[in-house]
Image (tube, rainbow, N blue to C red; front, side, top):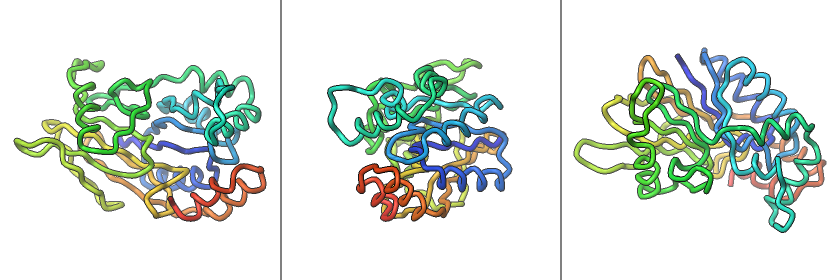
Length: 255
């Protein structure tokens, strides 16, 4: 099975459309959405509609911190993220809000553990942005039995908006590796790893192209992808919606 993993969509209609089309061209069999479906972007209802259709067709969908906030916005938080959550909440149907509120924090598939943030207390929304954080994530996942009694050797996460593979070398700790888009990486099940799959809807590494990854479970191979999309149109939609200019600027610069 070829599994497409998309995270941090952030209500970006143009980026999601481009990534779904690209994934279909790569002959993926299933989709997994690793959270933060909404927040920041101008099209939360449309994005959720697409995800809910795919969920009904068998896609895995996890909850991210922005999804939790949009389902039940914090009333005492004046941050831009909280303000965006309130704006998003008001534009979703009751069915869509309930969908976000009921999403799980983790999912298991064979030897994979899928989670939005770290497997180390997923509800705390910790960032996997260093070797130390990756080790804590892997330690938390290690030994947790899946459906077939296997360890969670490979942990796939989002939340950090960039793509990195933390790979366990022979006799060494986890080492960070920056992947080359489109180049498959063999991941033997005998070696543990943590991969951050990047952000579809709000890249933050200086490259405005959308990010996602494909895991081939038969070949044990992970491929990171970058997908160009009309980020100018997505930024303009944010401006037309009256959302903060900062959100639009991030799409144009990829930061």
